[in-house]
Amino acid sequence: MTSLTHKRAKVNGVTLHYVTAGRGPTVLCMHGWPQNHREFLPVIENLADEYAFIAPDLRGYADSDKPYDGYEPKTIAQDMLALLRVEDVGSFHILSHDLGG
Image (cartoon, rainbow, N blue to C red; front, side, top):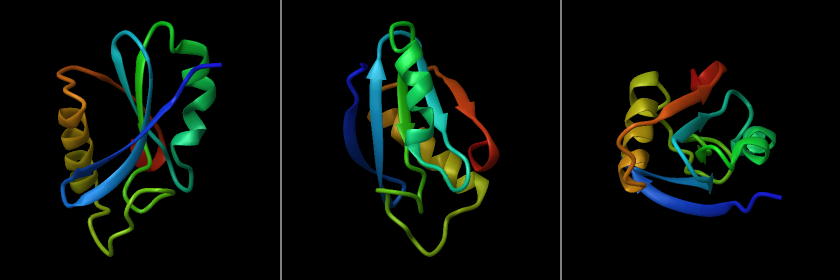
């Protein structure tokens, strides 16, 4: 079983919970509604030998902060770019659907 590292980061005015796992090119996993980072666990488990995954709980979900506003796509994108800076990631792939898309 792949080892997940649970982390928290203050980005764009909110604290996000996220997990990291694997090694290789970075894949940012952005879940849909009403899921959270856990929806990507089967993918992470099967591909962690080839890719490094960052799977956050988006603002308002699971163990991340739940502010009253900031749920429009532009703000969520700013959250993700700030999280990638925390992890010192310059290039990445996105795996997403629904809200995460």
